[in-house]
Image (cartoon, rainbow, N blue to C red; front, top):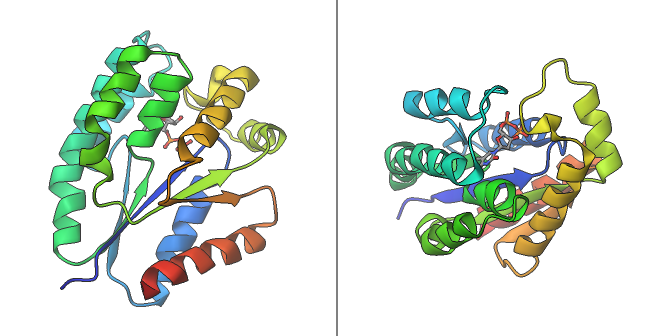
Length: 206
Ligand code: TYD
């Protein structure tokens, strides 16, 4: 039986996802564990095209249209990249997954249809997830990290009120999710990485 594991990283803007995903991937490489890293939106050339539409600062798409595009990119990436890698016995690290759509387009925008869409599709997307690493940080930390970036995307520019909504929505959805672990990233990078490494070690030993 191939030793596949599906790891999802989620979290607010400025919680350090890129840094910690790189660390997780390097750690798996060090452990000689075959894996792929994919991201949402993106992961395939179709997904990258959808990404440029979704992150376009001039776009005035409503939340449901955005959600449908995120889902189109996700279904394609899931079927063609993620499930294929898992079937080959590889680990998969995914930078955001369907929880981002629930939080960003659904709960933060109070969009009932997007929330219903999540309820309809949740079991399909979450079936193979082994671990969700939910990165959390204080709003102050998130803002200071976002403000040091040279280029920011549409969602990073929505301001403090939006970050607060994203944070409280993530708290709500992961409160009772047994696959999720919360990792606080206000601390030094090395402390955060020790914490992530412990979670990865547990998963590898399962
Ligand atoms: P990205 O550059 O990956 O940002 P981050 O480093 O914060 O993950 O851009 C993805 C942006 O798209 C991010 O601001 C969150 C947003 N997003 C949604 O709004 N809904 C979704 O379903 C996904 C996957 C991302």
